[in-house]
Image (tube, rainbow, N blue to C red):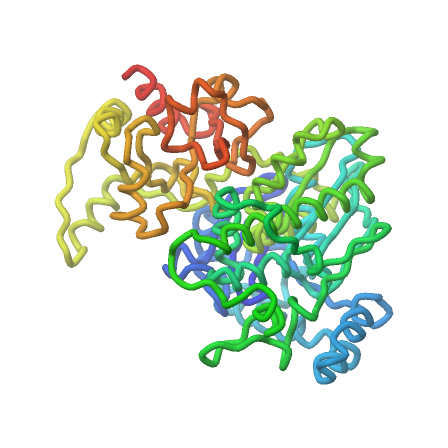
Length: 527
C-alpha cells in the first residue's frame, strides 16, 4: 500500500509525505525546494515529486492520496459557532452556514490539478479527506510509538473551523473529547499578539517565545484577552482574533487585532530591540498561553494522564517549547511526545498516517526527521561549478575530526550532511553550528550569517549521554521540542546556548540516527 499525503489547504507550509505500507519513506516541505519561506499560496509539487523519486515509484504506483482538510457538515456545531461569533461580519457569518465548505472544494480542485501535474490519475486512486485536527492528532499519536491509552492535545490557529483539540488514542483509534472553534483560538490569540509585537503571524511566534524571558510576566495583566470558566474558553474579540472592519490597519495592511488593543497597550512595536514594555507583553502572553493550555489539559485529559501518563501534542502550538517544559514537569505526565513537524507541514504525514491506520496498517514510530533529499559529493561539486560566484571547494577526509578543530577555534560552520530534516528545526542535516563554549560565536552567527536580533537564543545538539548530565530533567529530547533547566556547572561551560532564563532547547542525539553528526560531537568532546 502506497499512500501520498499532501498538505497546503490553509495556504501556507505545503508539504508531501510518502508511506509505503508501515514505513514513512520520505517527507519534505515545498519551501525547501522553491526557496520561499512557508511557500504561501503554493501547492506541494516539488516536494511530492521528490518523495516519489526518492522511493523509486511511478505515479501509477500511488494507491491513496490523503489531505488534511475535510468538509464539515452543517449539523456540526463548528459552523454555527463560527456564524454566531462573527455576527459583526454578516458576509462571513452567512458564508459559514450557506457555503461553509467552499474552501474545501476549492482546495480539492487544486489537489486534483496537482495530481494531474504529477502524472497521477485521480480516477485510479483512493482519495481521503482527513479533518485537519485529526491529521494533527494522527501525526502525534500514531507516530509516537505509545501502546497505552494516550491523551492527545492539539493547539493551532485553526483548521476547517476547529482551533483546539482534546482526545485520546486507544488500540490505534483516535477518539474526540472536545473541540473549540474559531474565533476561540489559543494559537490565533498568540498569533495576534505576535503581530502586535512587530512580527509576522505564522512565522514570528517563536520570536515572541524567545523574547518572553527578558520580561516580567506579572508587570501587565493580559487576562482580559481570554475568559476561562468550567472547561470553556472564549477569546475577547473586542481585542483580538478579528476579521473585516474590526481589524487594526496600518499602511493599508490589516492585522488580527483591533484598534482597541492599541488604545489599551500602546502603539505596535517597531524595530529589532527587545525593550520595555514589549518584553513584558511577550512574557505576559506566554504565561497566559501556558496557564490556559494547562488548565484545559487538566480539565479534559487529567483522568487519562493519571491512568497512563502518556500524552502526545501537535499543532503549531506544540512548537511552544516553554509550554512543553511545563507539561513534562507535571507528576502525572510520564512521557510527552511532540510531533517535530507540529505545524501544518506535519499534517501531510498525519493525513497519510491516518489513511494508513484506517486501512489496518500500524505505522512505524517516528524515530528521526531525516526524511528529505541528500546529495552526493559529485552533486555538490557540480553545484559549485555552475554557481555564478564560482565558490572554491576542497574535498576532505576525516570530516568530524577536521570540523571539530575548526569549531573549537571559534569558527561557525555550515553543516550539510545526509538527508534534509522535515520540520522547522535544524537537527544536524542542514545546520549552522558553533562551539557552545566559544565566547561570542552566537553573536557572530546572529550578526554576520543569520542577520537576526541579538537576543534570539541558540540551541544545543549533544550526545544522548551528555544530556543526562547537562539538564535537570532527563526526559527524551530527540527533536528540540522541549526546553530544560541547565545544571549550574554547565551554564559556564556552554554559555552560548543557555537562554536568559537559564534554559536550553535541546537535541539529545542517538548515534544510529545520524552517525556522522554524532561522531562530530564525540570529536568535540575530546578537544
